[in-house]
Length: 266
Length: 261
Image (cartoon, rainbow over all chains, first blue to last red; front, side, top):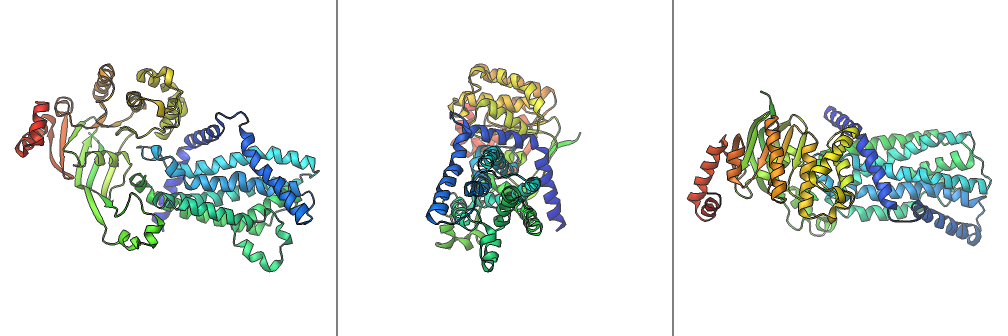
């Protein structure tokens, strides 16, 4: 146990010592993505916007389910999911493999890579927020004081992602199947997360199923804080944050225990 | 004098994988590789019980035939591999020039690689900025510095790698056969730079098959054979001993002697 703690402290220290490297890598990832495109960031934004239009069509007009201001409602859930969660999960799972030339180099601290993947996704999400606000103006959704909960909700999502990515990135070095498994799980989880629908409207007997998925609480919290103007369920959010912290401890421990084997497997 | 690099009873085993480079989930489940993976694995012993002390300022040549563990030793000191058992202590900033193809990301420009490489080595940003022009100048890559590294020739690549390594102001430099690359002029230039390092009292671990170079340039040398240290001492003596042994073995050794004699 004590050994574990020492290990964790050392990993966190190593990452803190290389924060300049982390920000540089995040900047490069963002730049690389839009290099050689005229529209740049617009391309990334188009995806959730297209889904927003399709889901509005399907839910409001085909299914005739009435959720007021549905485009703004659904985009509030789509952005943290598509711009950040799936993005960081898939690029994070392959981050060690993708950066093989660096990882096999002498001094490169591989433990910053999952952080870079999660950070890049977070920046992506932040860049997309003005579009969400524009939509709020169009649909007359007023931000209330509860919007100040946003940083905390984001911190919860970040901790959850970091913990997961440290684990999947490590496993993917040894079993490349991991990246495909993650992709499929993400597709399935999309429907088991209240993005298209409102958590409050789900029959209560099914709540526990959705609660098994920690992203349920995260997405629901975004929606409460931004769209509905109510406070998140603090107890649930706290539980997910705790889960995230636990996953980070496990994930970083796993990652650093296996780190020196990476070079042999790349 | 303090030691820059210490190895205590270091072993390095590599697993010999039964199927391909890496195991897939299918192998694990369908072919039942799971048990094989953890039990009865075959190992290759790349280093066996190597103990070594390298005092600060020593230029140590590492010689031995192919597969004797030279590169593994450097990679362990560089921290790329972890010893299977034993302990390694490295005191100071390490710069490593291991074999070509390592260290740079092919999709990034030379400029980005320099910046990321420097930050990864723990240099503060302003120090990189200060060293940047020197690196580009020395590597003679001014007009190519914003092109992706994958478009570089192997000579350009080697120049950049060498230039970065010597400009991060390392305390310990690990060199694996890199002085052989680049044209005559650049290799002369890099030799001068290495001599300066030697004068400045940097610790250098130098792996080479160029026995004359080791004998002439290194203070001391170790001779690795089958993952063990077979001899250590003044460079010239160890090189002589190695040559004699190769000659006695015939074949390869004879050729080696002719080549270097």
